[in-house]
Length: 112
Length: 116
Image (cartoon, rainbow over all chains, first blue to last red):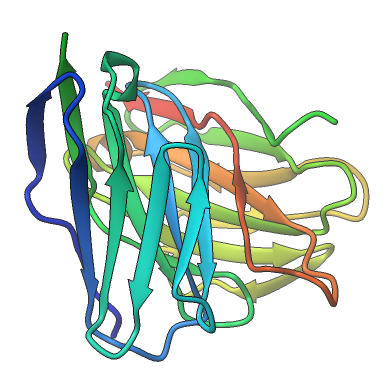
């Protein structure tokens, strides 16, 4: 059974800091991995999608990496801004039917 | 293109009543997924449907919960005889699932059910 872990559960950093959010999963036989952003009381916004054959994806100030063999992914946020404050969810796809297993998320607070 | 549309956004029910949550997928998407997010918990998969078919309902509670995705109209998640433990945010997601599918899911804003 796939399990996804995100530690720590919460993180507070000053504005401008570069930061790394970690995600680990127990079964390396994954189809893909997605990072989402969730604002309070809102839905999920897809940030980056990495296929199992890929090592990383980049979008603007965000970079996500994937190491299947070690069961890890990281989301790198450059030059953090207060608007980046949200919960970041890691989700692993374990089959062609796109079913996802989610971590509990990391709640990020970027202080002005 | 409109994204995944869910309604109602907020629903309050008393114990024993029925809750019906609706989801219209992204136009052209024929695959719908329902997830539940309990307070302080991660999102948990409930059910995966294609038009008129339930493909995977391994995450759905065996009793009181049902889902459908008819040929016409939105997908419906139905909860009968609600209990306080059903209070959660219910998210719908859709995907095109064609030959070029990347596996990416598009999520709605969620329906937040409160059971009094």
